[in-house]
Image (cartoon, rainbow, N blue to C red; front, side, top):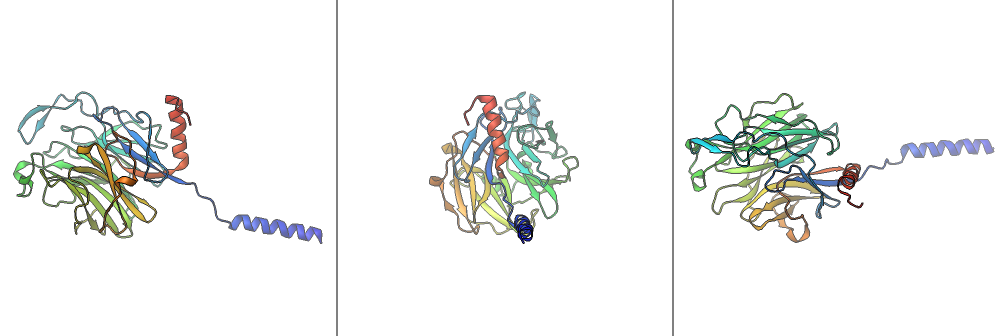
Length: 339
């Protein structure tokens, strides 16, 4: 009888172990960015709640490519002009995504003007990085720049999508563009499955006026949003959203503007049931944010967030806490930071 009871107990315990919920590792938040003048490389913030951010010291990837030529041809002035900060390599607007296999893919702006591609590197842990490469997406176009590439993984089509803004030729300006200053931009995008072969650049969302800093997010099945900046000046510089049923568009139904004038570099992350949209209020040298559940009503939460001074345009992703723990250990080794 005791043997039967013992066997029954072992069976019950084994069954319970097999059927009990598996504990999942907690997720935390990483916020990429640069520090002006964008020569030091990739800077990282981290947060446990998506609202309050701390800095990881130093640069986590120093730029080694791009911005080497002393001059570039400016299609607006129709003459050669000096390249800002050349020959120092730049890393502005670093955007990151983690693929299904766990690899982190990073893209960034290479120069203010003169580079017709974006930078790319990958990593398994945000510490050790692949060789940096230039992806020359606009090499065959008459444009001055490739600004603020944003990377998005399309889990429906199982490929990566990168969107950016490039200056259009003055002869293609609309009446709305003429409200702005020289250097009016439009959105473009490419897709890739392996970061070796890229689809030729295609036009992306075009509101009919100067616009930059597009950020794509997936709200739900067949529900995508694009956060973008109206870059007309003066007085039009602000953020709004448009919607689509496919990540590649077409995007329609623009919302009301929801950020202060002279805001840019928006990124969004879902925290609980709400979406937080962060943006750089660059003339005030600070970050602002709004929250929304329906992308129709946007509530300012500037007094609920903390972003360290000096952080500039990047993206926010969720990662396993073990990724952050490894970064903190590395930070301690590099800089003697107490854990």
